[in-house]
Image 1 (tube, rainbow, N blue to C red):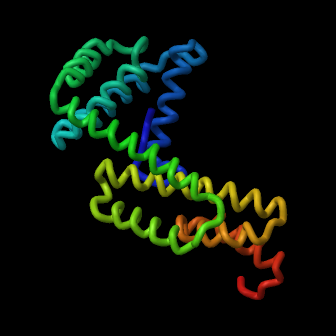
Image 2: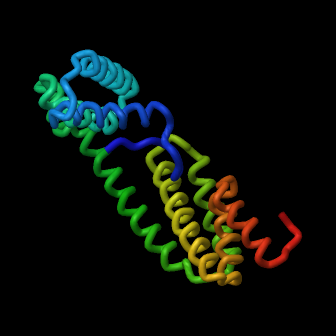
Image 3: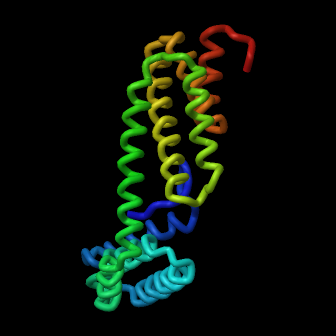
Length: 212
């Protein structure tokens, strides 16, 4: 699994390149493509540089994930014995165990938040949502790179995806009252999303609203 710090959107170029590398290496493993030593060596060099940087930054959880990726990507194409050993050593460390427990706690909180917001999808006071979205954004802004902030970004994206589906369904059914409510919510959650403006233009056209 490859993750990136961002909202529900296309990943950055380096993450896309990593995804394509995964496809190429799996094609070699499955004998769909011939083994390419140049690509394999380039992958090893890239992973080693990532490992070196993560060690400098003392990011043990991310380092663990990187070693795991090396094994998953290259096992069967390259000798990953040393990487597997390092992966085992990290898993036995107290620093990693503490970070892992923290991440699991955050994941549990995220699940509870998602459930909480899904229960509020029926039209409610938009002011309640305004307050909730502001709180989430404040938590994201307090320390953008922290695991807790990343969780809040995912929660916001989760609300955004749900809102998109509700708006889309309301517009398909020509339920303009529902559409109006969820468009207000969509604008709070993801004010720069072009899909929201597309739906908004469609809504204005159907209601003969001169605003555009």
